[in-house]
Image 1 (tube, rainbow, N blue to C red):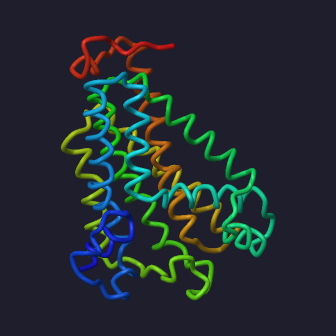
Image 2 (spheres, helix red, strand yellow; image 1 turned 120 degrees about the horizontal axis):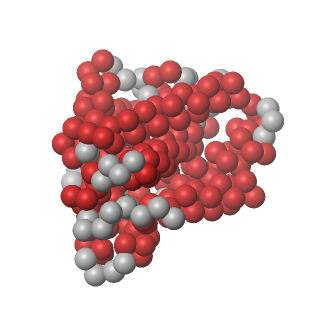
Length: 266
């Protein structure tokens, strides 16, 4: 039942039609966030591959990004914008929380989203098949990393002040193992061994954001969760791109199996 609650909460697909889920289950959705990534990342990767059969990779990549935005209802991007607004415009805990709760987007949120999507577009130079693998792996692993915030920080607001009207419970040992398995399994199954060091970039990003939230808010919010996921995922993509370029500089063309052309550096 908690898995169904996670799919309902983290996507806009009509899973709610399957059966009614008790409200208590939504307090346990975060451990299955990385499992939901198998769906959102899978749809994004599938859309990218299908569009890439007919269109240039740069355009297929944009379509894939839009596909995930539609599936998730921009849930995480909304949190990222609020995160940038709050931490950019607020200097105190109370002011930061107030700004983040405001439904209007501010200048920091706009600038943050613009830079976020501009950085995402840099992946358009990677081979199609390899990019599909990165998309799937990055979604699942980054959601696992972001999900750990609820285990290390308390919720920063009262439950009645929560946007989602729910405060997540900390994970049990079994839930942590489940989240980790769902997050790391795509790497083991699909990602080339030479790219495994990219696992570290989301972890380091998580540690940085954890310290930032602990210092400013002494806790986390739902917006912080969404922002943490997207920034961890972005760091995974950028780290993978850097690794691919380093390998290309040293003529280690492991990407040749994914394309007929070696990776070009511009």
